[in-house]
Length: 214
Image: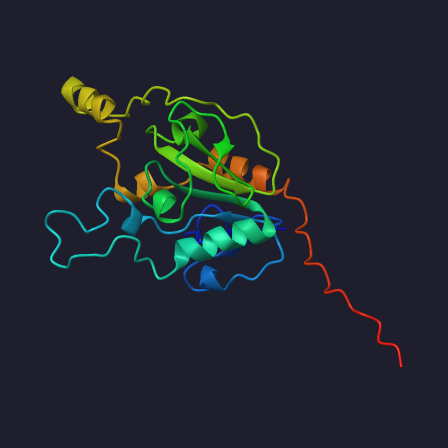
């Protein structure tokens, strides 16, 4: 069994054998094991526009996600699995994680036994590059399709200039917010495959007892 944390209600993690989805109604911050996890904690307060953007009426606080990322990181460290966040997420420096190289490859993320890498979801079915950072713990690290790759051509693009702009900026500007945030099925399956290799967590050692002689 794999616990899928912070996933969309009725989304691609639902109705899968061997997957226990935790959406907003279940509050994934409460997950207490015992299964390995695939975690997609909210990223709004860790991205480029963490403050809400130039037109925001309410100024947001960087990292103010109600403890979601901290809980997701703790769950992956405790039970094994993998956590996904956008490339250049401010969560990495805020939680003392090393930035992975943009060109790919797994590198040590911390002193907790975690590993991190940068991978393009465009290699796994997304219509844009969607560069993504992964944090993995207690799992077998697979060789992925490294490098940014090329932007996939948008269906029905209105102009050559629009396609050039999408390639230049590295984003698919004509995709809706939901399309950009969606997890492609091949990428979902990759994350589940990684989590399934998790080793059982080591139980804490029992305290030593001293024999008391009468």
